[in-house]
Image (tube, rainbow, N blue to C red; front, side, top):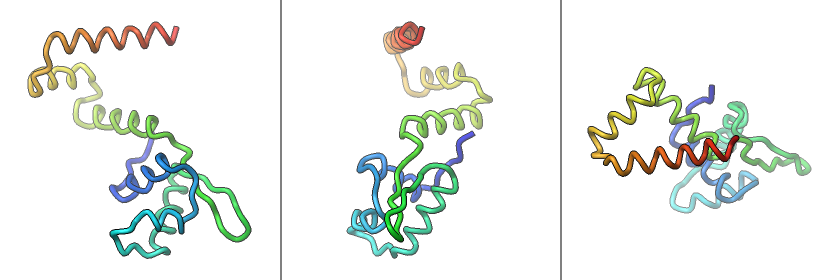
Length: 124
């Protein structure tokens, strides 16, 4: 089961997903509006590595970090956790809520079902 990331960790992961492999100093340069200390950022990146989200390659005495979990994998894991925690593991309950609360129309539901069926056929 994939761990949930903090908001700050998710922000860092988004940079890795968008920009690819980076050194901590390159990552720090992306935070132009905030006074984020290099050591703080470095500690956060190492924590992401411990959680299994990033890996590193060594260049002399410094490390270049890279995402080892894709954004899609993380998003799926997050949705799965929400469904498990709040909907008793029932995707049917999630869809029911969307129909009731978000005014999901019958046409939208039919389109969703068609898309799911296409994906299932592509997997076979």
